[in-house]
Image (tube, rainbow, N blue to C red; front, side):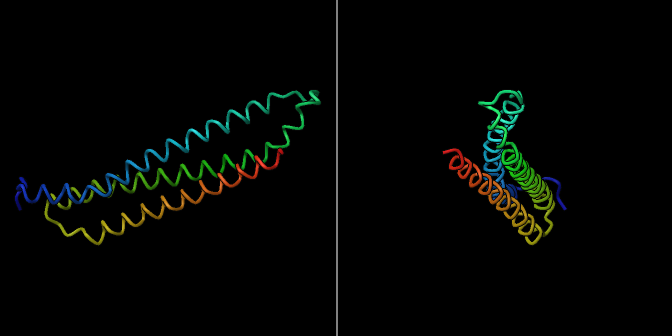
Length: 143
């Protein structure tokens, strides 16, 4: 076993890393979007919590706190799942690179890890869709 790979082996290693690297970039961007929405919701919750109980005009706005908290839970779950997908993808890149570098068969394991990362991302997207739906129905709620 050679510890110095040849050009063909390096080319194969980098070509195998392309799809997971793109997935990792997409997950990073998606996580940034989720985080931005989460920060906005948390700020809205803080603002509503600062309303005095004696403020009759604005006190009714506090009725939306349970819905906002559910949205925070959905977004937090989506972020957690997206980060799990990112960790899985990062491990996939590392393990695939090491296996290819040393010439080990890793195709089945790499396919399973990639599938797991995609399923985690899909679940995260589903949670995000639930949060968006709740946000839209919230806008309809205040008409």
